[in-house]
Image 1 (cartoon, helix red, strand yellow):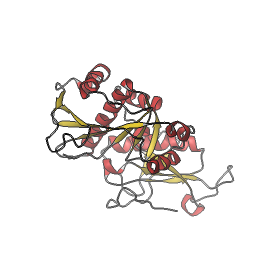
Image 2 (cartoon, one colour):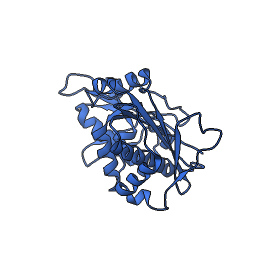
Image 3 (cartoon, one colour):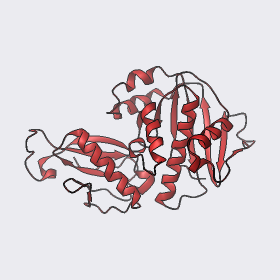
Image 4 (cartoon, helix red, strand yellow):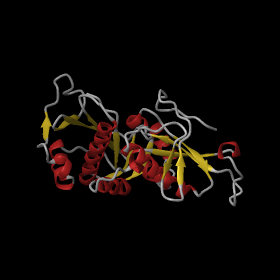
Length: 272
């Protein structure tokens, strides 16, 4: 089974619930995903039973693993994720108080396309959101982006998937960089500061590469919005993004993709 995503749900205190409860909550809240085919609890293999507090949920040929740990998420992971979580200023204080966590990941026998990866990310998100409804969750650390998401924000992202939207802000981290005039190609305009670009973390499982968005002379909030839309467009069109491509966001704003090697690993970084 292939499982490229892992969500770590931070809990106020250690705890455990049964996989059946998570399934029932998923059926109530996300019926389009969780009701067809009929979900089921899968028996834990004997070689795993007793060594880990793990449970398995089946949705057709898709399997979701649920593991509870009676300790906080590793401090080094939390510190790094907090640093990356530029839009949640209270992250450090809130995450510092959690006492346990649950890890969830969805898997398929084989991932054959970017659509399969999106399905697995969605399944991991739905299961995490359902669990967070039933337990005292404070945040979710999405391993592939290296970011931690406030629980209310994560729940809102799960809800937007019910309308067919892709919650890029849950799955992909944005790392701002200050550009150089050589990259930008003209004066910086009215800001008197170098333009800002974005490096992604978390696109690799979907398209086997990370993406650098070239610096532009706009506010960080606007750039993050355009990058979110551009990443969504990349996922919708299956990840075919040539180096140097320009993705149209609207009639006036375009997001340019910088150089990224298709054979680059998850930590690929290019540019200044």
